[in-house]
Amino acid sequence: RKEVEQDPGPFNVPEGATVAFNCTYSNSASQSFFWYRQDCRKEPKLLMSVYSSGNEDGRFTAQLNRASQYISLLIRDSKLSDSATYLCVAHGSGNTGKLIFGQGTTLQVKP
Amino acid sequence: EAGVTQFPSHSVIEKGQTVTLRCDPISGHDNLYWYRRVMGKEIKFLLHFVKESKQDESGMPNNRFLAERTGGTYSTLKVQPAELEDSGVYFCASSQVRQGGLHFGNGTRLTVT
Image (cartoon, rainbow over all chains, first blue to last red):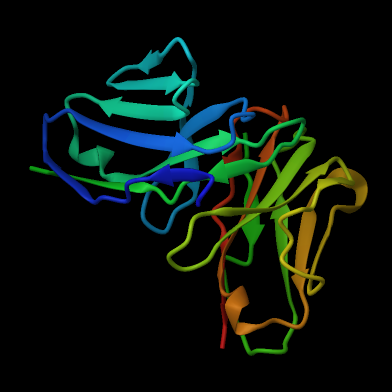
């Protein structure tokens, strides 16, 4: 079983749609969580951190449910430029700097 | 501020040859990481330096891989001898704090034929 699991998609949505991605993690000791965005043949870039209280950055909202070991990302009013792969990432347990990546969810926003 | 830079961007070598990848982290970032993505798989951790010390090398696949960070600045990752399964994209990343988000370089795409 993968440590971080995501639905690979692809998710094909029209411009303006709201889309949600989900992710589960297996290590209950993981402390920090992130969503990264990766464009085709580019490096991953930090999109946002994820907090238990939920956090919002413009059209993006991230949620963490520690009891269910579940993370989500909601994108409102999708833009063509949102097309990318979204990576769910957990920080390893303990004092490590190691990140555990999910396989990524591909989003394609169409006009 | 200059980002994380990696060299080369692409490398094609034959099985059995040696390749050395280089990473220059963001200036002032003590934490430096190597990750790898092989075709169809998720990005996987290789190792973590804090300054010049190896903090965690649990992800290194085998002893054909050697990473160094002499002087705590740039890092190299050497693969010797390379095997076909080493093909993939090797990412370097750096951060100021250990549990923060990482800044990734553009990656080195390694093809072993």
